[in-house]
Image 1 (cartoon, rainbow, N blue to C red):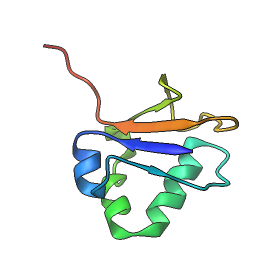
Image 2: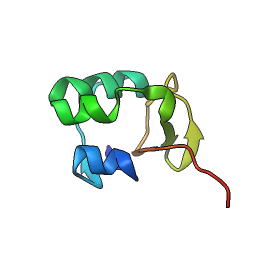
Image 3: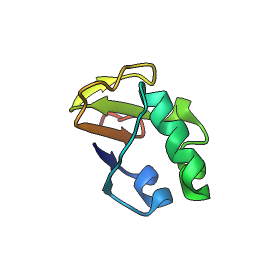
Image 4: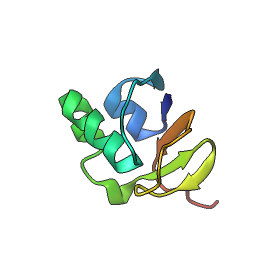
Length: 81
């Protein structure tokens, strides 16, 4: 699946997107897999409450199932202005 990173998440990981092979059942499982890879992922996902997630361009949460997902995006909360 494609995993996209935006704003400071992208800055900490150093990539805007990547193709990930995963057996994760939920978004949280996917994050656990990413964090286990390298320190830069651990830094980006250290405070999950400071992140939002979208699955196939629909806002979701970290307990959401990934079955059939083609894209997961991580980004900080959006502010108005």
